[in-house]
Image 1: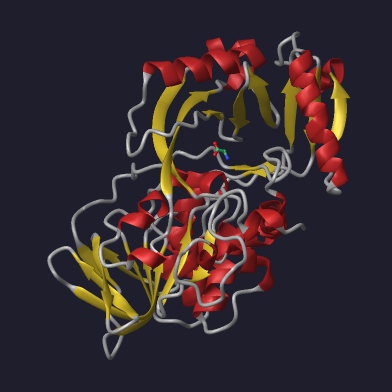
Image 2: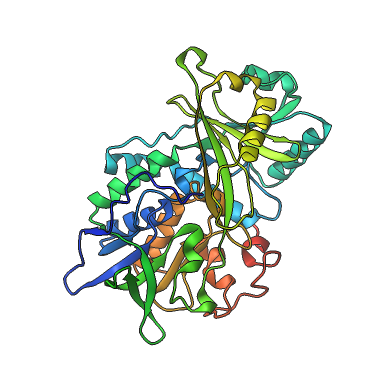
Length: 419
Ligand code: GLY
């Protein structure tokens, strides 16, 4: 969700450098989690890989809460996306183990489950319907009374009248995940160009690399646009393959739980308050992340009094004790929204150009599977079957394999197919 980065923007420079012959096998534009995981997995396949970003390690994950909430964040009409989300959730334990080994860093993965709670009759009806929907799809979730919810989480408000326990929806710390990916990329030999990508380079009807600020040109067999909400803004990309991503603002508040209050919450708690969703994500290091607003305001990343007020007001309704906790940070960022809320993965109709963008609410969750399917495709294989409903070509006018019904949110294949 973010444009904020953790202080790595120390001016254009390069580590790694172009390979002999000057042409990379894979050139990734964007150093957020999606670009980093793509570069890491590509380098592991033996591809000479470069990544372009003025401040790698920032991006949406810097703001994200890190819920791995395939089941509790299920939306009607997103059944195909659910299949991808579940497939990525299943990969998480092995992915984390491998990444921690490769980077030597802990990523704060916590297999703690999630509790979604309801207050009034409307909330309960909404959660009951969600429960029925989940069960119809074979997903694991359990209905609890208010008392049972409070037994699990004693800090919950007495006003909680029921809830859904989803034992399989976990969490990870996105900032640590990003830092670990950065180290893993460096150790795997990814060349970092800490500079801005200005323009896609074309030769005939083929993408051949990218031009950086100052005119440096990097040549590549395959270029991947993985720049989150900025992915639709790179000059030189032909209009008919430009990804339809838009920024969707999210504001987040971070509190800290002093030792004397621990454990304040033991698992992620979600609720719908006055029709708006709110979530509280407790980390083992004492951080409590409260999120998030969802605002269609273009490129604005201002933290507003209203946004913070609403988050704290709604979170207070769920867990009144939060007012005792120190407030340590507020931040805002930009989710890369797509017309059907699903990512665009794999080759575009322009030879040499692939996309890994549009992950919207699910970037952290989809990190493992994105790395795997992108690397397979970049190494010359077919886009794996689980990623095929998410081909960029479902939206663009130019299509190597026309999709019936595309483009359009309501009729895109990514929403119509069933898991
Ligand atoms: N997945 C949580 C959010 O986008 O706010």
